[in-house]
Length: 450
Image (tube, rainbow, N blue to C red; front, side):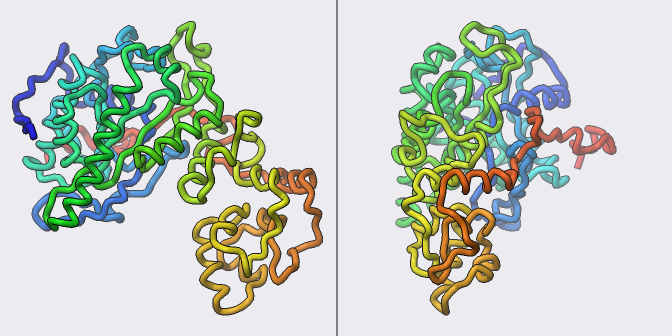
């Protein structure tokens, strides 16, 4: 395997800016990338190095629009040689540009970590010079963090499509999670809005990371001290609403990524209209956040509830119901499978009942070994009875006398006013600012002199 000299890369930087000015520019430039979340890694501190990936060390804290706020989330650079029509950092946009050096990112990460502002690093980048050059900048940063700054906390980085495969491989041994953005759901949409990018070029590093993870697991089984390769798995992101794909097409693509690439997560980013182009929706037009929310709900059903995309949607019904969550919508279209007797139904059948989640289904299966369950028992086990009562029986009886009728149940479910992760007027795409977090109480010098 080719090894790279972590100090050999020469930084391309057409301007001289202070580190604080760069931080302001490049943290704001990263806000549209949603594919970061808590680590899922259990690496403990060892008493010598800085940081830990123990579950309690990576904060499971999210902003109101679902974006993780526990990481220092920045771009290496917002310079880009590509001209993707939907991207704020595209080459043709007249915006202020900045590029971090690897040492600047290391110093920011360490100093913010020491003050408990962050638990880890999320690092992406525009394409500076070319993909391999950019990937080497990222690799150099991680190499320095791990080996010179002795940082053992959580790190999530982007794999750059088109970069040298050896660079991606070496970076994978330093990162906890890697992600390669699919960008748009279909190759046709990509060709129209991102002419410099190609589907095969994007899928190649995805496959490489998948194979590296599998190989790394096998090596760990044979050699206890073998280096871990991307131990928290890989993820990807799709922009929703910039191109006209249906929800059915999007979920089919996501299902394929889970099945064929072993993806840990697929993230969905509602399109925000920031550029003017005839191929794009009108400027200031945003894809409804409710659509993004429904896609995440359906994604959860694919990953944990054993649903398939073709069960939730079809060519005849290509989009999700905006009034009902996907699971309730499915149940109402399959009333012939209900009501379910909770004292006899198997685990997979229980998972399909609205109001019964993974944990409550597991608790039901365990609790009924000790006796017959009643509705009061189900409430204590975490079942949301205001939804489930239309679809279940206990001891052969329903909770109330009710009609197993689609219109009747729909009206009652809609009257409950589903709680959404954003207000009725929507939200802006704003992530937590570390500068706001400091609340003006400390100068930048105090961040960097600990």
